[in-house]
Amino acid sequence: MNHISSFFNYIKESAEELYGLFRKNCRNGGEDRLKLNEDIIEKVINTPLPFTSNEYYNFVDKYLPSGADEDLYVDGSDSFREIATEYDDLKYLNYIKTYITNPILCDMGCGIGNILHFCNKMGYKTFGYEFNKSLSKIHKKVGVDVIYGDFFTTDLSKLKTCDVVFLYRPISSVASMNKLFKLIRSNTKDNVIIVYKYPHQMRITGFTTISLNEWDDDLIILFKK
Figure 1 (cartoon, rainbow, N blue to C red):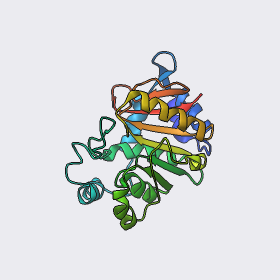
Figure 2: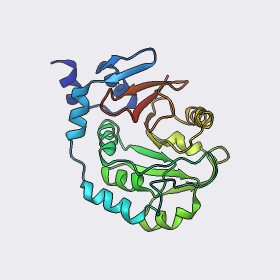
Figure 3: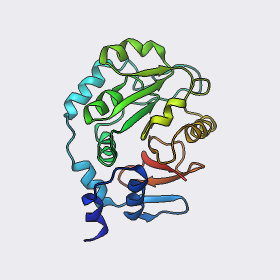
Figure 4: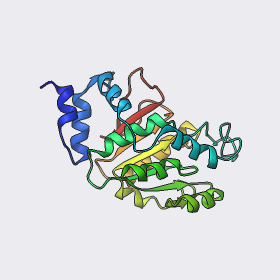
């Protein structure tokens, strides 16, 4: 049995074992950076989710504030938002979930709560952090658990409960993102998996990066060293 097929046949229950399998199925892309085998990426992308793309995008269209595709947060130069996370990106979260018992996910900068809402449907227990408290009405309506406040002043200790942390880059400043990752590293357990959309840089101090090769330059997977 080759290492690619074994990757899909093993049943693993810890993120540390999943990391080992990720490494086994990656090729080196430079120091502290690995590239996920394209065969695995194709299998992940071709695995159906328990909801359709229409369901997902209808939710986004219904709740995403007008103009959010340009800039959801108008709070100075540190604002950063483009559009909601793409449907196919959730397939990586769905795949990772199958290797963790009773998985818990946190979305850092959860916006309207679309990742939380649909990860609940995938079998995750979820919660998020969000700066924009005006979105609380949406969060209550869709039934997601959100902690409000600035990342740098809010208590992040609940991150210790997480198996997976998702970020759709919430801050434009590279220096602020590096500061945030220091906080994430110090407030998460050792075997946490971080899925990062629109990374501010490919190599982040204290983490090993697994990129998706040329398949998707906008999404990386991180493990704490």
